Length: 285
Image (tube, rainbow, N blue to C red; front, side, top):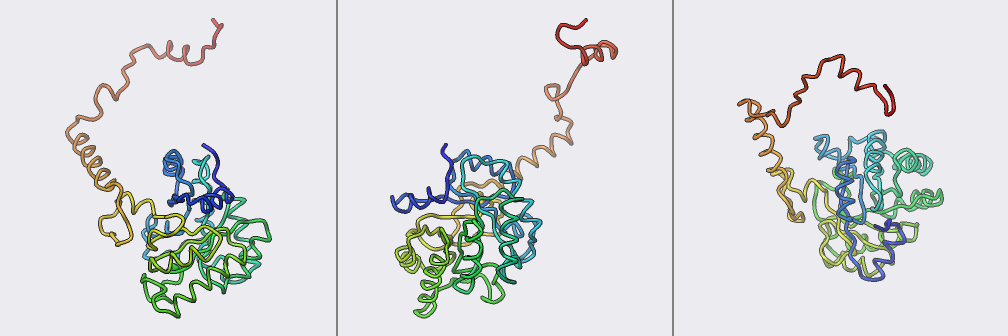
């Protein structure tokens, strides 16, 4: 499989080829998703909710992001790798933002960073890209601003709010973003934004007209029955499978059916002989 790069994604937009993107938080999931030829893997700060059990993404730290990024990178050879800039890592100014973006690339082995917000972060994006780091933008519903937005609600409804998002998209492209995530905005608005910028758009709850789509991997695998938003399609019910497998394991442990002979080792060779064989080398006595 050929490595996906920011140039690959641009060519996909130009050719009308849809981009697939999923989140990943560890090497095992990353390896499986890479084998499936997913184009982009995002180490999202959504890990705060799906991996840590937090109610928002706001508690995720830089050290945690770097840790998970490095784990994911070890499982990937094909996908383009993007690491989220967590809350507080870029809001304080460009110098702090560049410092933290460098950590995600150097320590986390990512190939790009993603940060949330519109034109107000154009200077920060420009500084990060001038440092040689590609930036993926993120507008619409921005989870790090959940309290300011009043919850996880659709953005861009109404003429003024729609125009603001279109202006934000253009400003982020001008600042140097190579792609944009459009989250929880009306389909028609997402189509208009996609047509108004020359960089790929990746939608989540933004309809079918974006250049690509992204979902949280735990959501599309059905890992949490209590979370079923409209924009998520479950492509499997892995949560039920895992729970069923764990119950079967518990039952076999309790009954003594596991471990069976096939899962056990029977070696009655004398200890002295085993030790000799353990340390013998080809051609030795």
